[in-house]
Length: 268
Length: 338
Ligand SMILES: Nc1ncnc2c1ncn2[C@@H]1O[C@H](COP(=O)(O)OP(=O)(O)OP(=O)(O)O)[C@@H](O)[C@H]1O
Ligand SMILES: [Mg+2]
Figure 1 (tube, rainbow over the protein chains, first blue to last red):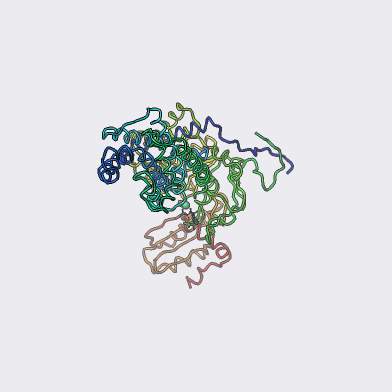
Figure 2: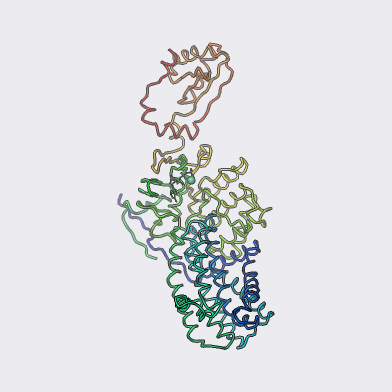
C-alpha cells in the first residue's frame, strides 16, 4: 500500500454571522414555546403585581408609616427581585429540556455550543422587560412617581436586566449540573431567599443586627436596590451602587457563563 | 483549510469507508458499555448493528454523534475525527436517537424548519425542505399541530424527518422502527433506501432480523461492548445454520420412525422433541428441504403441519455467542432417536 490519501485535519469555527442566525432561530423557538404554552409566562406577569400588592399593603404601614412612601421606597428595589425570580427559574426549564432529548438533537447540529444558552438569555430578556413594564406600570397606578427622568428610569431597568441576566447563567449552570428539575428549584430557593431578604430591598438595613448588616452591605441586591432608588427617586448617590452592580454582573457572568457553556456539551 | 497528504496508517481514515471505528472504549463506572469496538461502514452502504439490550448500541451511536466522549480509541466519520473535528463531523451526520427528540410544544413543521435553519439552510429552502419531508412521512395533515398531540409513530416519523433535513452523508438510526405499525415501518424502510440510493451511508441498530435483512448490506453483532460477529447478512445466517424446518406429525408415535428415515437419507441434523411432538431439522440448503419432503412423502407419514423458519435475531445471537460449541458438537440426534 503506497497510495497516499488526502484528508482535512482542520475544524473551522462557526462564524459570527452563522452564530447570530442560530441564536435567532433558537430564540424564535423559545418564543414560540411561550406562545404554545402561555401559562409559562404567567409568572412574569403576576409576580410583579402580587409582590407590589403584598408588600405595599401588608408591610407598607409598618415599615414606612404610610403606603405611598413605602411604594416609592420599595418598588425600585422590586425591579431587582423580579429579575432574580425570573432568572432563577430558567435553570429548571433547561433541566427539563435536557430530560426530553431535544438537547441531544441540538448538540448533534453544527452550531456553536453557546447558541442554545444565548437564545435562552435572549428570550429571558424579553420576558424580563415585559415583567418590568408591568411592575412599573402597575406601581404607577398605585401612586409611584418617577421623580427623575425617563432616561434614568431606563438606566434602572437596564441595570436590573443586566444583573438578572448574569444570574441566568448561574441558574443555567445549576440546571445542567443537578439531576432533577425539583433539585434545581430547591437549590434556587436556598440561594434566593437569603439574598432577597438579607438586602435593602424591603426594609432599610439600619434596623438589622450588625452581622446581618455586613451581609446586606456586600449583597449585590442591596446595591441594585440602592441604585434603582437613586435612579428613580433622585435621592442618594448613584455612581457607587451602579458601579457595584456592574462589577457584580460582570464578575458573575465571567465566572459562570464559560462553566455553563462547557457544561452544555459535556452533560451526557 | 489545511489539506495534508499522509500515508495510510492506523490513525487516518481509509478512503471508501464512511465510518471507521477502532478500539473504541467507553466505561460507565463498572459497566463496560463499549469495550474495544472495531467496525467499518463502506461508503453508500447500510450496516446493521445487532445486539441484546445493554449491548452498547446506543452508546456507540452517541460516540459517533459527538454526544459521548470515548475513553479510548479512534473514530472517523466521513473522514472527520470524532474527537478533533466535531464541528465538521456534525455537518456530515444525521441522527435519529432511540428516544424521540422533537420539541413537543412546536408543530411538526416548526420543528423541521428550526433544524433546517440551524443547518444553515436559507429560510426559503428550510421551508421547502420541511414541507417536502412532512409530505414524505405522511405528516402533512398534522403539520401545524403541536408535536405533543402526535401519536408515538408520528413522533418517530417526525424524528426521522428531522434527521434527514440536511441530506446527511452519514445517517445513524437507533432502532428506528421500534413501536411502528407495519405500514409505517415500510415507509421508513423506503425512505432509508432512498437516502442510500442518493448516496448516503447508514448505520442502523435494530432488534429485528427482518429489518436488517431488508436494509443492511453488512451486519455487526455486539454484546457487552464487544463485536462478536460481523459479515454479510447471508454469511452470518449460514454461519448460524440457515433455516429451521419444523414438522408436526399427525401421530406423535411416528416421530422416532420419521427421524430414523431422515437419518438414513443423510439428514443427520434431524432431532425430535417428543414432548412438543415436533421434528426439527436444521437446513443447510434448499435441497435438504426437498429431501425431507420427499422422504416423508414416499413413506406416507401423516403430517399435521410443516413450516420453515429463518433464525430469529435471538437464534442468530445465541448461536453466535455459543459458536465454538455449535460447530464442534456432534449431532445429538442419534441419542434422541435411540
Ligand atoms: N449514561 C450512562 N450512565 C451509566 N451507564 C450507562 C449510561 N449509558 C449507558 N449505560 C450502560 O451502558 C450499557 C450499554 O447501554 P446502551 O444504551 O448502549 O445499550 P443498547 O445496546 O443501546 O441497549 P438497548 O437495546 O436496550 O437500547 C448498559 O449497561 C447501560 O446501562
Ligand atoms: Mg439502545
